Image 1 (cartoon, one colour):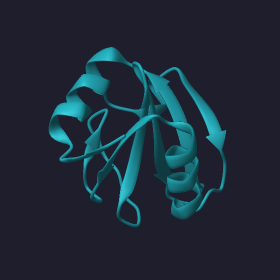
Image 2 (cartoon, rainbow, N blue to C red):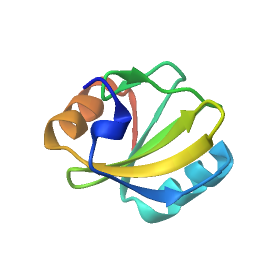
Image 3 (cartoon, one colour):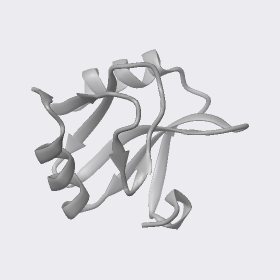
Image 4 (cartoon, rainbow, N blue to C red):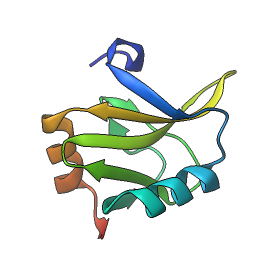
Length: 95
C-alpha cells in the first residue's frame, strides 16, 4: 500500500491530540494495542507520542495518522489482513 489516501477510510477526529486519540480508542474499542512511534501500518511508519494506541472492532482498525502541515486525524479503515498483521506484531495487547 503506497498511500493512506488510496484507502477507503473514515475520519473520526480531526486536529486531534495523541491524548485525545488514546482516550477515544481506550473508551470505545474492546481491543487495542499500544505501539511505539515508527510502527508500520499499511506500509507507512506512524509518528506520535508513545504509546500510540491502535484499536480494533473486528477487522476495522482505528488509528491516529499525522499528515505534516495538516495535523493528526483519528482514522477508521476496514482491512482483515492488516488487522491480523498488527495483532501479531504488536507486543502490548490490551482488552
